[in-house]
Length: 373
Image (tube, rainbow, N blue to C red; front, side, top):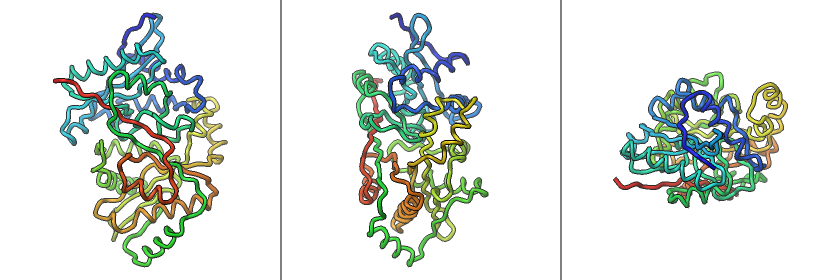
């Protein structure tokens, strides 16, 4: 098979780039097709504010008859470079047929791209940054992905590792079967409430912009010490949070304050992947009807983020977040939830989740490869 690398330059090219996964995942029942319209927006520099402080190039490997058989996105994230003082290139949106020649061409293109831009390391997959879908699935292929968590065929692991990439960090997902709130958590929260050192409340959807101020402030403070963290510009944060606004259920989105100052937040979303899977990437002509018909049948949730500012972490705010969310799950007869992702060595997060019954059931890996100067 004659193959060549093609840079995505035209609208037709981008359409092929976005639709390639349908060719890859036809025989994978766990795969959830993304919404094509959402992917088009996400990769549109005029719509997605991420592109204002990043350079992104898209490439495909095509066969002699111009059929795409692989793709990759290469990103120079200027915000990452400023924050970490590193010259790093990122790859993501990686898809390829089971052919080492195809994957090798894609990753060789990534290496050459990095060298041209004087970047000394390639990291990924990140779609397109750590603030988006992150990691390559390396364990847990039997369970479908929840909202915002990537999925890939098992053979991708060999394609990536045999090219020479090494593990940088694992991101783990935990599954919590919801049966009964642990007694220690009940009694602990009762004591915390008597101390009255902070308040926890649901998000106010009628004051969403004000609440976004709080979330942005907490995010860029609470996560700053995490491995790979990249601060988000306000415009980029607003774009991301508004993408999920229609899925937000206020009782599952909690904000903590200490004497009126934002201290932390916890966001839990229904796993709309259960519905998206039935829509096959399209809102029309029946996509919205399928979504509206099936959205009330969703029976699992993802705890997508839970963070507390460092100076307030000893107050027990996280315990109240866990308690209130668990209680709401039981009230609504939700059987299980996903808590992801968590850095594999973040014991401060893993320990309390495991104590309430969470068990690791998926593992995603971020890889890296350094280059000689």
